[in-house]
Structures are given as C-alpha cells and as structure tokens.
Image (cartoon, rainbow, N blue to C red):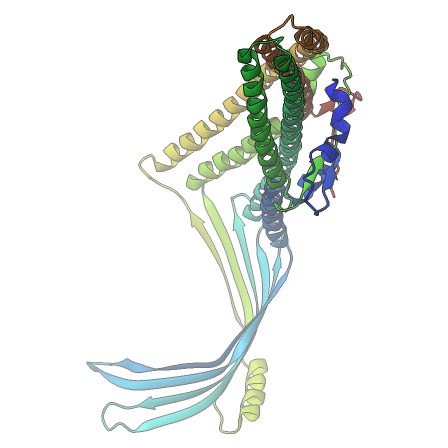
Length: 502
C-alpha cells in the first residue's frame, strides 16, 4: 500500500466520528502567515522594535522647539525667618507668602546643541510679616511681571544632542534587524513544526496500515488454525501482534494530537481550535553553489549587520570616555525686563502698574563664559578610555568570529542538503522494495511458507523503512529552509529572499 496515495485524505481518515467541530486545514504558507501575525515571538519582538522606534523619535524631537507652561495656584509658604541686624543679634520674624501665577517658556533648540529661550513670568503675591517683639503684622500685595531672553551654548565639546540622536538611530536600526531576524527564525520554526505534525500524521497512518495488516494476518491465521494448517503458537503470535498494533496506533494518535497542540501554540492559534495540515511529498532536487551560498550569507546575515551597529555604538562610547577629561566651556547670556508693583489696589491695578514699571525699569542683562579644565584625576579618565576601547576591540573580534562561524554553518548546511537528498533517494528505493517484500511475505504466510513471527518481523521492517523515508524527506526540506534562513537567498527560485511585511 502506497502511503503517498493515502496522505492527501489523511484529515478525513483521522477524523473522529463524534467530533462535530469543523477543522481548519492549513498549508505551510498559511501557517507561516498566521505565525508572522499572531505568534508570541513575533508580537514580542514587534513591541521591542516599537519601543526603540519611539526612543528614536524622542531624541529626534529634541531638536524641535518646545513650549512649557508652569502654573502655581497657589504657592503658599509660611515660616520663621532670621533677620540679621548690624551690631546686634538677629531677630526671628514669621513671614508668609501666597502666590498665584505662572510662567510660559518657549525654547528653540539650535543646531549647534545650544538653545534660545523666551520666558514670561507673571504672578500676584500676598506678603505678611509678623514681628518677634510684639507680634504685630505688616501686609502687602504686589504684582510681578518679567519677560526675557536667555542663550546657552556649550563650546569646545561635541554636540551631545546629535550624538544622542545618532545612538538612538543605531539602536532603532539594530532593533529592526532583530525583528527581521525573529521573523526569519519563526518562518523556519513554523516549517519545522509543520513537518513535525506531518511526521506524526504519517507515523499514525503507518500504524493504521500496520494494524490493518496485523488484523488481516490474524484473520488468515484463525482460518488456518481451524483447518489445522498452523499450530496454536502461530495463532497466539498473530493475536499478540494485532494487540500490539492497536497499542502502537493509540500511542501514535496521542503524539499526533500533542504535536498539533504544540504547533498551534507556536503559530499563535487558539489551542482549542481543530486543525489539520495539507502537504504533499513533491521532491525537486535543488542545485546549490557553495561559494555563492557563503557570499550571500556574509552579505545578508543580520548578525553581521547587528555587530556592525554594535561597533558604531561602542565607538561612540569610546569617544564619550575620551571627552570625560576634555576642556569644556559654556556661554550663558540673558536679557530681560522686570516690572514690580507694590501700590495699593486690586489685582488688575497691581498688574497694570507692574507693566508700567516693566517699561520704566532698566533691563537686566548679563553674559557668562565658564571654562572647565581637568587638572588631575589619578588615572580615572585614562582607565575609562581603556575600558571602552577594550570593549570595542571585543566587539570587532566578535564580528570577525561571526563571519567565520557563518562560513562554517553554510558549509555544514550545504553538506546536510546533499546528504539528505542522497538519503531520501536511497530510502525511496528501500520503501518500494520493503513494500513489495512485505506483499510477498504475506502471500507466503497465507500459503503456509512463513510463520506469524516472521511476518511480524517483515511488518516491523516495513514500518521502519517508511519512517526512515519520511524522515529523510523532512530532513531535506528543513535543510533547505535553514539554508534559506541563513543566506537570505532562495536557491529553489534563484532570487533574494525577503519576508512580506504587513
């Protein structure tokens, strides 16, 4: 009996008679599509990629202007305050203040890493002082208004905003590579899981066939025993073989259900959903150029690109370490107008008076240039640079080792593909021979030229050859899938392999 002719209707033969739930039939392409959308691995990596994307957008937004509003409604403070007196001990008066107001600040980030800021501040304040001597109090209302411009610019140092943006960009692009690599891995893992289910289904069908053969042998043995053509021992052997076949079928059915549950979990399907797979046994030999496979792997492998980004990030860390002991400067300048009113009146009159004072009062202005010069740190900066440089050398060494590992992997996978193809063709011949051999052995058993034990041995050999056949086929398909994953090249269609992203 040819298993290939039975597998396409496997879903029908394996269906439980009392099961009313409709099965979802899955091809390997459909399973991969579901996994790339619903599997935990892909969704988890997608969240990590989105986190890095927002991190990058955060640093990118640092170059854009910002507008901030701070309100204090109210800001209340009451405490004992020491008041110094000339040629005498201080007195301790109680002071209280309650403010209502706020400030508005517009900051424009300069391409040089500095910033210009426009700031307006406006508040109304109630003041009270209680004197220590007689606890009498003085009260006053005042209004304060301010408008000014400030400028800050670091000098003699690298633009940290651009550097932080570059780091965030490298990290985001590296996360994109990690996400793509996770997709490639899930494609391979789904392929492997799909064929594990396929093998379990195939093994169950082999045991079904073996059980049918054992029961047929038992039927023939009973007829021959009744006519006295075989001893009772042969009948008992065929009965034992039939019972063992039933046990083997039960075990293989359990493995089949387990593999299906694991596969549903892998691709992100509901564990309670009934599925079956649709697959054929088409075999096409693929020509693989080893040198081309190595070149494609070195050019396309995402691990190489990730290591290149790691080198760029570590180079930035080395540069930062060197700047720990650099000369740094900063320019700070301000120019603002301030108005203060303490005249009697309501809040509106106070604010209007403060605006008048805002125009009449001379502006506040100033500029400061600060310079930080490292003198002596007892080797801290030098050791920090050496530490970062050592990590950079380690990262470069890792990239070199990754290239060597890739070459080794591709050589091994290509050998596996060739060996699996040869093994498949041999097992294909063995399967056909074993099938014919069992057919002959069954006829000999029916003619009385073969014992029940010998027939059982032939059945066991047929089952093992059939399993070896499917194992060789699956090994070949998985080796091709692994080669595609590790080279990003489709040798079956001779084209670059890229995932279709939603």
